[in-house]
Amino acid sequence: MQLIVYNARECDPKRCTAMRLYRAGKIKMVYNLQELPSGAILLDPFAEKALSKADAETLKNRGVVALDCSWKRIKHILRLRRRMVPRALPYLVATNPTYYGRPTTLSTAEALAAALFILGEKGLAEDILGLFKWGPTFLDLNREPLEAYARATDSTEVVALQRQFMS
Image 1 (tube, rainbow, N blue to C red):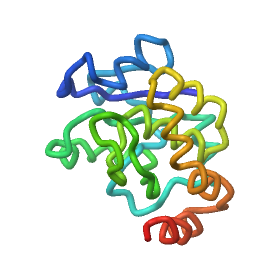
Image 2: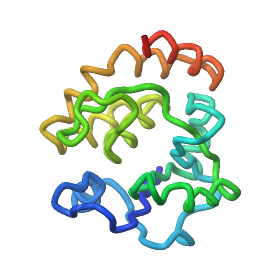
Image 3: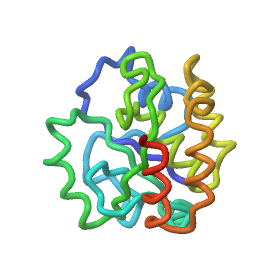
Image 4: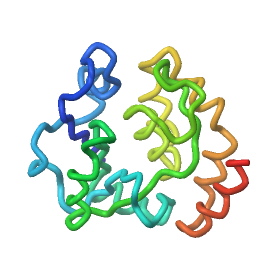
């Protein structure tokens, strides 16, 4: 199973969760958009469909891609949608030191772990977050929604569940 991160080199390497994952051998890091695999799941905050266990086969066969770039630039990068499977993560709350307590503003590590958890790879999600002292807090704080999203059969169900956790 491939976990790939496109790194736009826009963040502080000392605080970058993707760099720590890369150094630990947990992900493949690419710096060129053409190196991203076609048909992989693209974690895309603007996607029309939410990630659900219906996407698990794509994860196993093609992998999942996270974008490590600023929100200012993300719209330009999203032309990748044409050759990938764009999916939005549902409502979750960040626990990383930069955005602690902010809904939907996840670090790259949190986003990848959430995707893995929803797609049935809970052990791998825990392994990834285990590299960060705040990592287990992410799973603890978001346990109920993550488990609900992981049980949902499709995107429509995930979106309906998400509404419950947003209030």
